[in-house]
Length: 192
Image 1: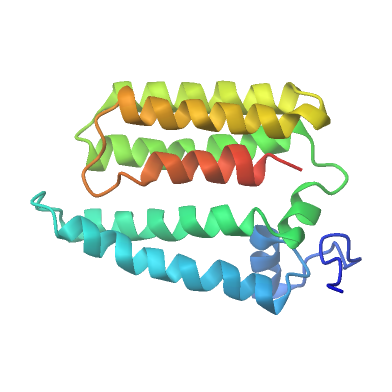
Image 2: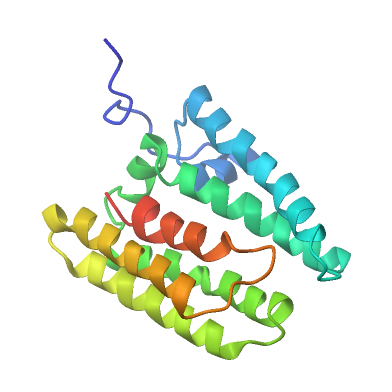
């Protein structure tokens, strides 16, 4: 019989120093298996994403390829990290409500803005459309009763995938950006 890691009682206080900074991102008490599951695919994405983008005839600069690497690391890592028991215990601890969750989502407007500015040539319609939908979807999920949040989130994620496919021209080399961004935030982070 497997141990119930999600409900395992662990200290909710982050450690001091550098390990405490990590705890504030991934949740205190992450198991070695959770850490490996977060780190290995994230590093793989940070390597694979710019390699893939550089195979296209876009003439990406080293700075742009660096941004692509960071986005790959953050989004793959974020999808996995936010789904762990340690992260759920941390982000849903007492005192964390809709404002904190919406704030976490809004921080990711930086991602959208950087893609719009540096990888889509200042495509502010892309920024406005993606950021608006993300904010609206997050608000609807958070306003839903707990027992409906999962189907609401998955439905809104499905609409995001359709919007990505049919409303926006994909960013060459970053066709994965919007699907992973919405998966990280709407499904992995916002669902308790």
